[in-house]
Length: 260
Image (cartoon, rainbow, N blue to C red; front, side, top):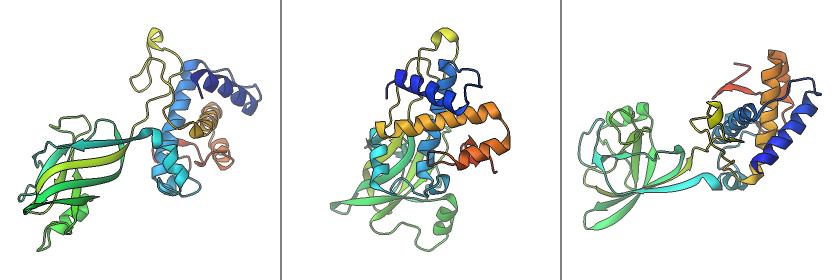
């Protein structure tokens, strides 16, 4: 769906839902709702509890196709000294991709002894890491490595870095990550003359997601526009219950709904 199609169909659906009672929206306002709808749908796919069907990214094959346009692979061969709890060899720091939204899967290539070994990288929470490090054997399983995300303080990218924890005698040679990138905002027209922007973008930008998701984004944007216009809690809950997307109640922010 092109930007013009987004704009025209938004007007049709919005006027139909509101029975032509609400004031019209300009291109900037429609861009805000479309971008918000896109972000909600993307994030809900990675949290099964955030959508009606309780299906995550790998819930079915369509979900993978939906995000094929945003799937990226990053390979890193340069490692720095560990910036958090560097207790022994085999712990290195690596810069995260600048546009990462969610990691899908990761692997690590290491030199172990005289040969090359491939490890599956397992994300580990801070609590679990502390628990594991209190045990006599303070390392991942034989063919695994841990990944611990740290802050952006002193990192090479704004998104920060992560520590990769392998075996004490492993030499890290390559880290490969498949991830979903953050989608660009949907900006229907150039905004530079109006002095406004959306997520720092003020030039025309089309939706990056697979066209199969465009109808869901459009429908959700109209629902959000109606919820913003009516404003009362009852109408927002009712709108969510009758939503034609998989999200349900319109969200007030990431991870929050009208019922919270």
